[in-house]
Every structure is written in C-alpha cells, then in structure tokens.
Length: 289
Image (cartoon, one colour):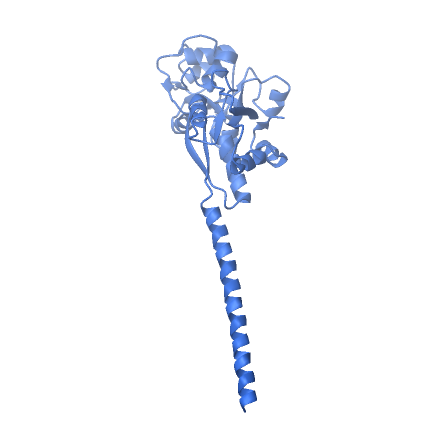
C-alpha cells in the first residue's frame, strides 16, 4: 500500500508540474498576441494635407490601400492650397502633401521630395438645365467670363441668365483657364468666386444655368449629372490629351520627407505601384510614367 501511495503522489506532482508549464506557455502566447495587437492599435496614422484639386486622387488611392491593409490609418488634415500643404509637411504636421504644382525653389528645404502622380483634365461644365449648348469656342468662353455674353440664348441655349462660377486668381484651375482660353481679360464682377473646388462643384449642381470648370476625374468617379462641354470642337478626354488636341490639364503630385517613416514609405510604394497606376486609369486620371 505504501508503494502504491508513493507512486500516486509522484504522478500527481508530475501532472501538476506539466499543468503549470502549460499555463505559463499559454499566458506567454496570449501576452505576445496582446502586445502585437497593441502595436497595431498604437501605430500612428499617415497624415495627409493637399490642395483641393489633389484631394480626390489621394482619397481614391487611400481607400484602395486601406481595403488591402485593414489596420492602416490615414487622416486628411486639411485641403486648401498646395502652398499650405507643403508648409504643413515641412513643419512635421503631416507626412504627405498633395500638390498641383512642382516644388518651387523657395519651398524646397532639402529634406522633402516631389514626384508627379497623375494628370487630371480640367473641363468646363454646365448645370444640366443648359440645353442645346455642347460646344464653346475660345471667344465665346472668354466673352462669358468677361460678362459680354450674359444669356444662354445667345449661344443657342435657353433664354436664361448665365451664372458664372469661378475660382480665385491664384488657384490652378483659374491659371489654366487663363493660359489656354481666357487670356488676361478681366472677369465679370458678377461671377461667383468659390475658394475650393468642392464648393464650386456643389454650387454648379444646385444652381440652374451655371457654368464652371473642374476635374474630369471627379465628375466621372461621382457620375455627376452635369453637362460636359467641348472647347473649339475638341472633346476633353484622354485620347485628345495624348494627341495634344486638348491641353488644359492639371499635374498632380505628392511630396514627402526624404527619410519617411516605414508606414509612410509603404503607402508611397503602393500609390506608385502598377496596381496604383491601373486604379488611376480606371478612375479617369492619366497616370504619370
């Protein structure tokens, strides 16, 4: 009996030691998993600022990136002008800046880098109430913006006053309109000036008989119920841009630190990948080579 009892006690002790080791092993694994989860949760977000014209392309790419990387966090800090976004990058407020122009010498502090991402056609649109007007010549467009043509009836459209929606003179959209069509003629004082492209797009959709210029890609992505105009008989599309017939296009690029965080670099690698290239094509942008 004593021998049997000793064997039983020894077995219980061994079983107990095994159980303790198993508990320790399980606890360590759980702790490791918790730590890993915490690392993911505490991973800082990628902060982006951009001009109002570059926000659309950046959001398209961000949504696709986050769909693949479920733990990735991206925050859009603001969108106004390229200059403000670049200043925010240089002051470490954001990780990436979207811009509608290349880095100017006075903006380059030697620590940041620029790369063009895509081109986006700038197109003249009208509210869908404007029937019978599908094409404008350079002189007609100039006369509308100068306030010399004030009624759509003069152009074969409805008998209604033209509402001109415009952007500030220092915005890329207005600079392009002047470069290719408007020249230096003064804009009518009756034009409604809208600081952000999104404001112009919303206003054009809600204002009968209005006209304004904005992103072709934004219109296509959101399937806006607006009229797209030809200019001098040229349809604004990729083919006519490629062959040089339609030249009014914005060059959209991104700027980031020369020594970015691994998180930022991973996102940059994605947006310039072949997958990012194809995504931009599908969304009516023209990817840069």
